[in-house]
Image (cartoon, rainbow over all chains, first blue to last red; front, side, top):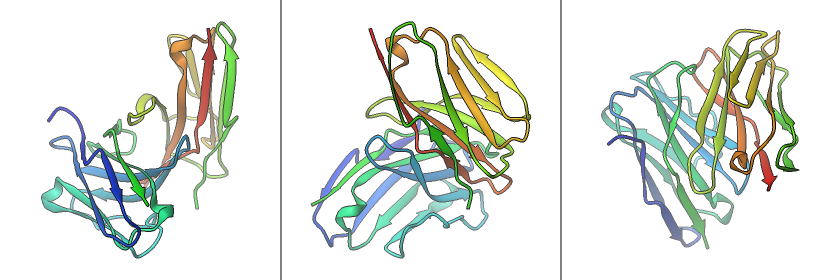
Length: 114
Length: 110
């Protein structure tokens, strides 16, 4: 596709359930980021993938959060045993490589934990 | 831990006024980016500055990177309602991780 695609766009789940959020980056982009954004707030860094290097997981808030990137392309962010405080917009972005490059963002997944 | 602090967090002004948004840190960044975000969408890059003291202009928007590469500012001249949105600064280091500030919500009233 022409841009970063995220699915689903909206997800409502019950507390304690697991959820998977998907990100399809722009073809050829080697770097992929996941961020979390609360209403009207800035972006909280979660995890960063760069090529075949080990991902930077320093932003994951707890061991309930994990992410994978298969084949250097599609990425899945998994949240286990969701809590109400996990409710937020989860944004994915990709770029060709260096951080000086332009980040292309998806429209995000709005996660609501009831 | 690298942190970027933006100020003000919220700004409501009349059309035609000028404004400045600040982005400050105690850490040095190799590059500083500014993004603008509209409701329901992801942020969109406005500019990247990489050299200390660098000034870039984008129509009515002027961006400056501090000499020590620890801070940046965004100045908007003669703001228009179309400038309304969330403005985010983001700092990059050598590790590749990009850190965002908490954002400045700008509302320009006609």
